[in-house]
Image (cartoon, rainbow, N blue to C red):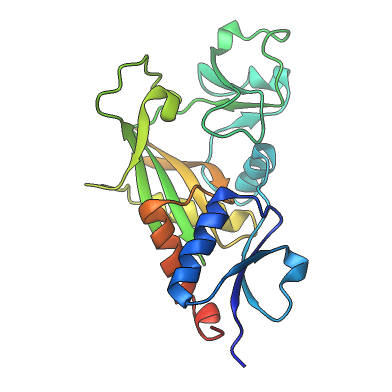
Length: 239
């Protein structure tokens, strides 16, 4: 008997997974359920793990020698970071740059800048999001300035609020982009995720910033994930 496909996750309210459910259902010709990991039963599942906080991720990056910014988890050590600018991170699970302040190291004040995480600021020529599934790169996007954006732009935090959008056209990925992303995912003991990676031109080197366990899935990204899931040999032979 052929097993049906399902999506397993601890967060069944995820909009991204709901979109993936709809896309996979249309491709396989039956309803693909979203279930908790303990409710998979006799189905074959594509599983999405819980996201890990940034401190845990940086610790794992370091333990596996994945290039990433230097970091500190206490104020006194923040003063020893190798950059003149420090990213003060009030949140360890924030996205879209929420909770980040860019502060000159000489102006750090313990009372004003107390935070659970501090990271060095690395200048970046480019910033990418690399989608990895089954230990392979399945999609790549680059953050670029949105045409027509009239607000004040902060180039150090490249998010939607600062006028940046994801693009796929005319990509020129650095040589180590894919290997950096795959190694970042694997360092967490996983085989999939969307990795935020920056490229420093002076060092000609990529640095992993974060692995997103449940990235936003829409448009081409949704198609890329759906196709990769259904082309996975383990899933294909079961479905």
